Length: 299
Image 1 (cartoon, rainbow, N blue to C red):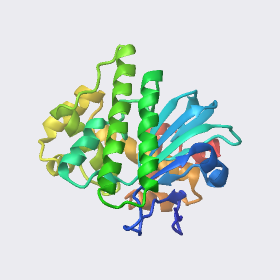
Image 2 (cartoon, helix red, strand yellow):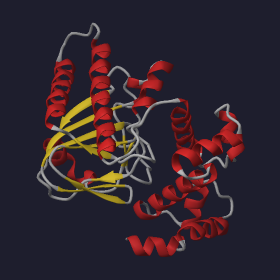
Image 3 (cartoon, rainbow, N blue to C red):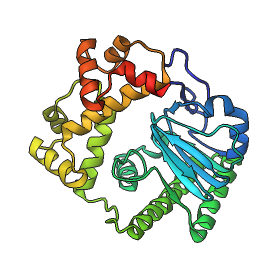
């Protein structure tokens, strides 16, 4: 996975310019961390999705600005472009599964599947879940089948089988998250039209937050009315569309302030602000700290 030059936050890819190479990879967690400790223990992002299954070991796994306690049989879901890092010098065992979006999503029905799974980029759900004993056996089987197929010299139907095993793994993971939510008294996630539209909106914000789009602009791209968009974000998340857009901009500003050495005006430009002083006011309005003070407090 070569690292591209001139990245601000360290960014890693999976066979990005090698379409003839597998677009999915399965790694032993301990071996991977031993080889990649230098970058894995620092905040970084990927252009691919990542499943991290901690089978044994304890410690902390940091996703953006939240520290999560790692326990035995904990499964994390890391979206593309989400900043995370591992503890230093931790003795973990487990499995990593990496896959590019276009590997799983080759048709519109497959995009619907990824949306309905709702494991990644979901502001209403946790970034992890615990794996129970029964599901552990199922997931281990899917991992074994993925490894077996990746190692096979047979090319006929190879990608189809890999996608099938990955989808089965994700389905079981979503069932785990649903059950965990039920035990906490939460309403389980159901992929109805409102939820799918919300997920599409969140994904569109992820793609477009630096473009200065208004709520009307987002609604138009989603073929929704601004009122419908506002109703669904308020109903499902208790937030307005504009607040969700602002929060995404602020999150990226925080990432760049913490994980890069860019000057404030450079960060402002990257986030779509023509006037750096307006960006400073915008940031301070949301966090009650200037960008400079935030950087000092977090480094």
